[in-house]
Length: 231
Image (cartoon, rainbow, N blue to C red; front, side, top):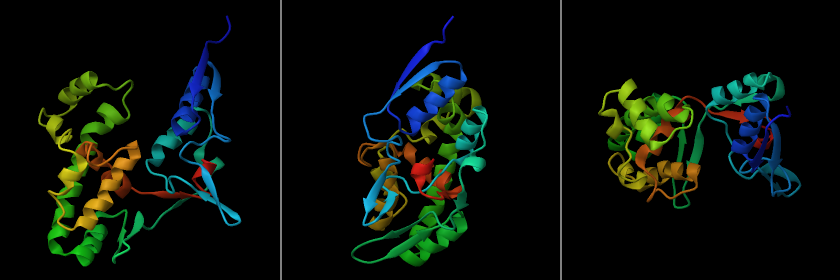
């Protein structure tokens, strides 16, 4: 019997990952992409005489990619050179101020205190604590779960965590409003509101659940030698 045929539309990170898993499961895979090259958001742009990343510039959740490659019989480290970044990102504002955040909560706290004062540094501690709790609640029940949906998510959270964790996941309010509970400096709200771009949305309509990204970034970010499009 011939292998089942799967058609995957879009050769971004999701489409490429799905194609790898389907091929490993024995499917004959056709991957369709309307662009000139695979990568999706991980595309390149020509600037003067060189190619630069036109989308994401750093890699997070490295273990997910290591597992994807391992499941396909390959090793991520054999294919790419990854360099752990000493900072998560450098943030700057046209009207003044530069802030570096680090893959270390205490160092980031001090950086925020120097930038915006003690109150917002304490706010960051509360923000990060909330971020870690959201991540703990959703890591296995949603982020790495098979076929997640609202119904199965509720069941998994109730089985694996305390019922209060459902609201701790912060399905409401929106991200922008929630950030106001932690930071008085508008620049910090702007900075962390960028998490909405991970899902192509606005912080005014994205749930505060996305605060979990702060925890993900504090676990480390990596630079891909040659740019993210190499991945």
